[in-house]
Length: 451
Ligand SMILES: *[C@@H]1O[C@H](CO)[C@@H](O)[C@H](O)[C@H]1NC(C)=O
Ligand SMILES: *[C@@H]1O[C@H](CO)[C@@H](O)[C@H](O)[C@H]1NC(C)=O
Image: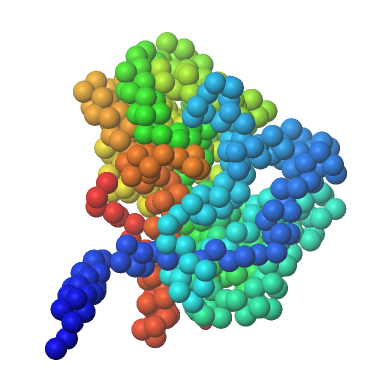
């Protein structure tokens, strides 16, 4: 006769086995392996502060062309703006690569064996590694070599063989345009050919700005200076932005020198010069706003609309500062945001949280921005502001080591970027498995419904 205890144990194991099989695996489809790379591809790039000054804080370079060493503090968030400030940092966006690496290490569902992973993260500090080509004119002609050492390392180890590289991703803290120079063509200062390296062509690059046909990259929000570590800190800020009185109709923070040819920036400056009653200008020329968030955040809290004209490139960090401040962004072209940040802001619902004024209408059509914005009814402005502040948590970068209540309250810029990457990689690996690789190059549908 079998021992009743054994029978009981057997039944217990059987039932608990059934129970786990029914439980959905919380890591299904979300497993990430962090590829370990030689230090020259990451840690070493942060090491040269104080000495030779390369690539950080090269003293011979103009003040704004390199991140200062102080920006390395707090894993790349930079120093706090003030010893007692809890959520505000002097963040240099170019150190996002180091910070992203730190945050990925905090994720659950990391796996040691790349064979078990749904996606593989390459902790290569790509934009920092490009600084020598940007800073040293003598290296301009070498800039097609940016990333070649990484490509060599990966192919020597056969590391991309599983899916031809389609399952790998990395962060490039810059605009994709700046890293997609034709390798044989004339060299443009400040650009490299990283995205043109054939060996890396199938990788997914997270960038701060994507090109018009972004099958290699996807944009994630520019980092701001606000990095809350707890839900209480996030709520306190959002409440402040919600309550703030808004006497200023519209605000522009950026370069204030008039361009020589007519363009949207010139039109804004001309209108603001005329309408000092309605328009606030924050002079950010010569790097004045870099790492000094108080300079623009305080005026943004007092403005109803924040103007986001394109500069050298279509996107700007100021868009995300404005969203945090509850200042409704005004866009002049789709490339400024709608065509970029589909993983973070719902592309089909821009009318709920932003105003679109085509730049041609302003520059050549005589449309006045202040008149257009003054005509938006107060109730609608309030509705848009509520929506902007609802979306703000999705575009900010939570501090590393944050409290569980903040992590559970919602997804931040990094959580959403990683989810987006996992979706994209799943789509691509399926396309390969199904024998239809042409599907890899299809434009993806960004429209998420649950926002
Ligand atoms: C990139 O992927 C395609 C299939 O989509 C493959 O044919 C090609 O060889 C891959 N390139 C590299 C360098 O692995
Ligand atoms: C500025 O004001 C002057 C005089 O009222 C007007 O003629 C001009 O068109 C205005 N310019 C802009 C850009 O609003």
